[in-house]
Length: 293
Image 1 (cartoon, rainbow, N blue to C red):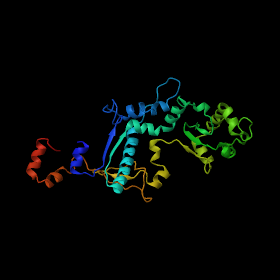
Image 2: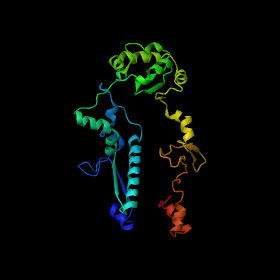
Image 3: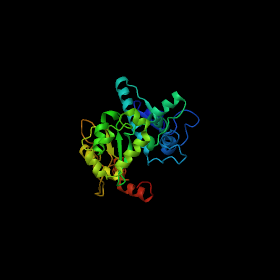
Image 4: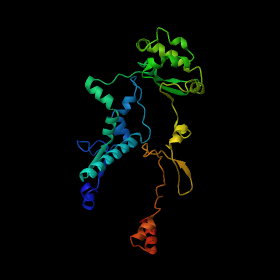
């Protein structure tokens, strides 16, 4: 069913298409799951890979599909505004490849300017030791994002229980921390590894610098901030089973999303066929012949 066939019935309809590799070029008709077109071809996977020759990480299920779907939705929203203002409908095209390029834009643009890929830093030698991950004694990880590290360094070290690091000539300011980054990171790793996560959560409560704990998918369900904002709205299926779903990241008028279940498989078959004029005997005959559910 192409756009001409659809617009023969509805000339003003907005027609959206999702692709693997775009609408032009020799590979336009090539199949493209997100692991291939988005993660592999689009550079996302290699962006997360190390330089030691080990395998790149494998993406999570539907990782690119979800982002691609959100991009399609944004395109449709733009087309709706255009149609409202001009009366003209649009064809909206989004490919997994283009979505990856947009998401990896800073790296891709920079590589075009410099002629080489962005240098990769191992966690042991991050340019800013205060923008890094640190492991606790009980095997949890904390992410710190102190982009203005000098602003927060004194309070950071105090909360670590190591005020001596504030004036340590190796780490006293951003330039010397960069020069001695391996030593600084090793020192911080040893400090964090000496206590459990609960200790550090208490220690950094109220800290003005940006930081957070790396949570698991299961932990998200119990996150007070997630609950307060209604990010995991609950619904009940036709069998009475209640469960949480990931809500749209967009909220309107400060109101959490309200969910209702999609119809079950074949739930409204009889009703729709009856509306089309089929009687009960005909519908039963359809089911016997496996024409419908």
